[in-house]
Length: 313
Ligand code: CP
Image 1 (cartoon, rainbow, N blue to C red):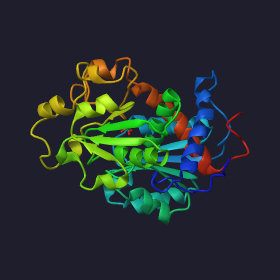
Image 2: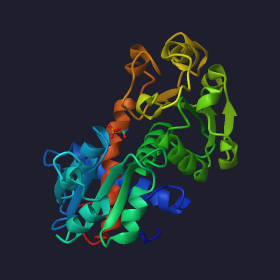
Image 3: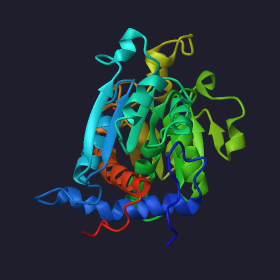
């Protein structure tokens, strides 16, 4: 198996197929740790992981923290509120001060695209992008791909539909990079106003017909309608959006009986999907969350390079 050599994880665009597969394989070996009575291995003992979250998060922040703790790393949480950022200190100065305290890893989420790259270029500790603006959310895509592979046994040749607000979605972008590298066929669907012009250049198909996606896909990933990123009027109304692109039990009638419904969370129930679909037999939404811990354990472990104290401990 290949050796991991990267210092940072900024997006899946820069990763090779083999690097993505190494993360998935490593995550598989770590998944079992979270089912143990004592959910801990010593792989990152003595390491310090700092969570720098400048945008709200439930799943990603908690998942990274649990992953670091289950690998025995020390963790710190910093958000803009309550830090000297509110006094006008820049993000880079904040990060450099954190670096000066000899930390090993910075996990960063920010509303602006490119902030993780700026920190990675300027700092010594490894940097993981936990979501930057509309650009990338690599660990979300990795946990999505892990969940598909675990459920369906393969990625190559799978038909994966991504439905909703593609324009503002870092989850869609990272999934497109990851899934196409692993040989899946990706179809994007959503209102034309929320479909980036020229997105087909990334090797995906575009449709504006939800039924086309439901009839032809093995997996449908439903995206959150990102009300906070829609400064302009992209939609006539939320109600209209739900009618055209929301997934409910009735629309699922045309889908394969084995279709997987995924959602990165947080969900707007009754908008992009109904409560009965979110909680129904096709939904793997909470499995995605479970798998997120294993993926983040794998990423932390690979980046911090402590290959001696392996996952099998
Ligand atoms: N999927 C995701 O990134 O969720 P959070 O915003 O809660 O971290």
